[in-house]
Length: 275
Image (cartoon, rainbow, N blue to C red; front, side, top):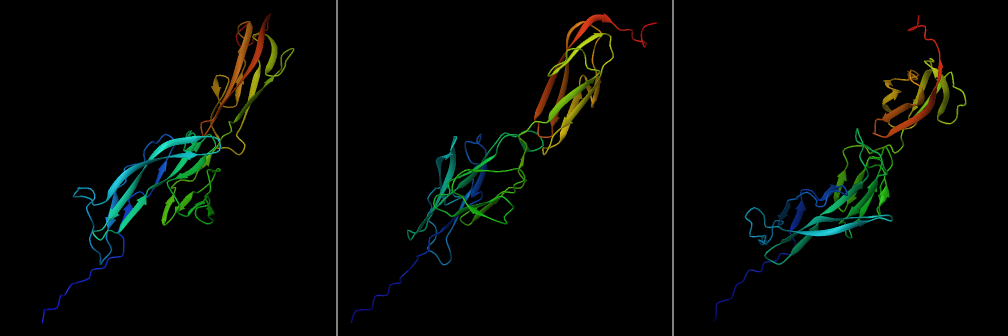
C-alpha cells in the first residue's frame, strides 16, 4: 500500500511581547515629543520566531508615532507625540503596545518649587487600568481626568502593568512673601503707604517686617538700600522721596512695597555733621 504521510503540526497561539524602555514618559507642556523609546520584541519559548517588520537588523519591532492632546476643563495641551510598538511572529500572532505619558503642567521657580498650580494629566493609556497616588504609593485612586497636585505630593502612577514614580516630592509655593515697614517718627499727614512729611536732614529710622507664612521661606530681603530688617529714610534733599522694601522667597516669588514720603525745606541740625 501507499506509504503513510507524516506531517508535523506546529501550533503557536502565543503572541510576542513588546516592551518599551520608557513605557510611561514624563512630559511638560513644552515637550512636544516623548523621548525616543526603544521597543524590544520577544517571542515566548516555544514560539514560531519573530517576523522582521522593520528591515532593521537591530530590532524586529515596528515603532510608529501617534499624537494626542491632554484636555483639561480649562485648557488643552499638546499635541504630544508618543510611540506605538508592534511585534508579530511568523504564525501571525501580533501584539501592539502603546507608550503612555504623564504630563505635569506648572511654572517652575527656583529650588525646584512650582510657583503656580500644578496639574497632572495622563495620555496614551487607552483602556488600561490607570491609577494615581499622591502619597508615595500608599493609596491609589482611579484616574478619570486631570487633577491638582498639592504641595508635598509624592506622585506614583500605574498604567496597566507599568509604574512611574516621580523621584522628587512636588513642592508648590504660589504665594509671595509680605514686606512691610514702619517709620519712627512718622511725619506729618501720613497715610496708607505714606510716611508723611519730614524736615530736611531729619533722622528717621525704619523697621522692616518680612514674613512668608506657610511658604518656602525668605531667601533675600532689603530694607531700603540695605539688606536686613532696619534702614533709614534719606532726608538730605527736599522733595518727594520713596522707600522700597523688597522680599523674595525660596521659590522665587517676589514682593516689592513702596512707601512715599516728602522732605520739606525746613532744616534740622544734624549733630554728627554740623558744628
